[in-house]
Structures are given as structure tokens and as C-alpha cells.
Length: 308
Ligand SMILES: [Zn+2]
Image (cartoon, rainbow, N blue to C red; front, side, top):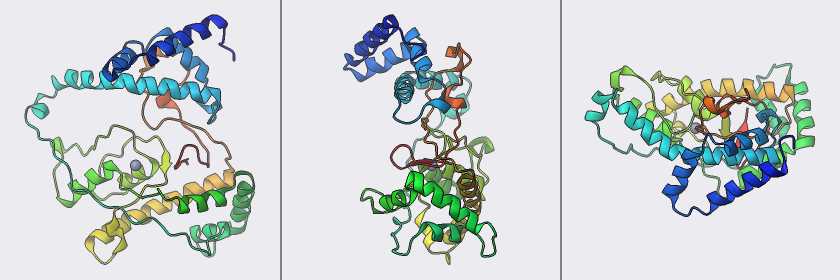
């Protein structure tokens, strides 16, 4: 590796070992916060290389993941400090508030694997009947399947016992506001979340009649993403509301999947679904920060996680 030298290796190793001796969680987070801009963190960043070159399981990926985890631990100190700092400018909100849970929205059931399922059948369902691209698209998908065993993966996912669809947190809050016709504070139709939204949540927000602010996204696809169960009964107003959103989402998803199959992206690239939480100021070498990284690809990486 380009940046490796025995001296730097020893220094990094000593530093990492010192981290592992911290048994107290708070002390660990404080240490991560204090050292988030240290030489060792810069070393980890250099070892991570550019994200586009770091594939899952590689040493670069391991270093990137390690730096990300330390950044997340440091964020436990940074975020409350920022909240307290910001509270001075937002006294009106912080003087009078109440924290309440929203009613839990149940997701649709897990889909059942049909015996007739095939890759060609999936492509056929994606396209309109007279679409001339059917055959080339089936060929492209079959050629990807030969390399990536996509169909085998799809079957495996259907049969996974722990696979339970869930309505993601930001959708739970959005639907509560919409259902109860609640007003947003200062008409700011923004729903905050600790992480950027996933691919499906962003599309859901984009196509929601409540016109919420479209959240930033890390672009990942979580296979256990599920819409509210009310979509199953499209005779009810709630079902119709869900159906309208799903149809608009599916239009975009079909287009994105088609483009990825046609472009035949076989790459597996990893990136975190949350911000590392280390600001641009540590970026002394002009490399991208985690927040700037985006990936193309049509394949799985971590458990249940896909990119489009
Ligand atoms: Zn989501």
C-alpha cells in the first residue's frame, strides 16, 4: 500500500490498540471525538483511498469502515454539543415541546416466492406489452446473472427466515402527520432523521401528496423496505392513498432498474448509510469526504443492502 511505512503502521497499531482498552462507552466516544482530526484518522482516510476504488471486503474497505465507525462514535459527543449550541438560536422551539411516540404503522407481509418466478418473467412484468426493448433487456439481465447469480440471490432473499418488511421511521412520522392533518412547525415540512433516507424513502417522500421536503439520501436499497399495510386494500381511502404513491414510485424504480441492467453494472461498492460525521476541514488532501461519495452499481453489498 502506497502510504504504508513500518513507522506509520506501528503508530496506527498502537493507537488502535489504545482504543480497544477503553471499556467505558462514554470515554470511548470522548476519545473518538478528541482524535477525530488526528494524524491517525488522516492515515485511515489515506488508506481508505478513493471510495470508487474500495470494494467490499478489501483492505481499503476495512479502513474506510473503521474510520466511519470511529466517526460515528465521535458523533455521540458532537451532535448533543451542536444541539445545545443551536438551541440558543431556536429558543422558541426548545422552550415549549413534548416528545411523543407516533402510532406504529405495520408493513405489508413478506412476499411469497412463486414457483413460476423467472428472470425473464420479472423483466416482462417491468415493461409494457409492446416494449421493443424486452428481448435485449432479458439478454442483458441473463448475462449479468451468469456473472453475479442474481436469480439465485433473489430466491435466497425470498426464503430468508429473518426477512420481515418494515415501514421506515421517517415514513411512520410522515404518515402520522398526514393522517392527523398535523401542522409542521413554522410550516417547515421537513422530517429530520438521524441518517439520510434510503432510495425508497426518498421516492416515497417525493411522491407523497403531503408535499414534505425531499430528504437527502445515501441511495441504498434496503430489501426489507415495506409500504404501510393499508396498501393491500385499495378500496379504502388509506389504500388508495398508498396505491397512488406506490404507482409513482414504481415508474421511477422500473426506469432506474432498466438503466442499470442496460449499463450492466457488475460492481460491488460499499459506502456507509450514515455520515461519518467528520467535517470537510480534515480533508487536507482534496479527496472526497464520505458525504460526497456516490456509487453506481447493480448488486448487493452488505446483508439486504443494494445500490441503484
Ligand atoms: Zn428508508
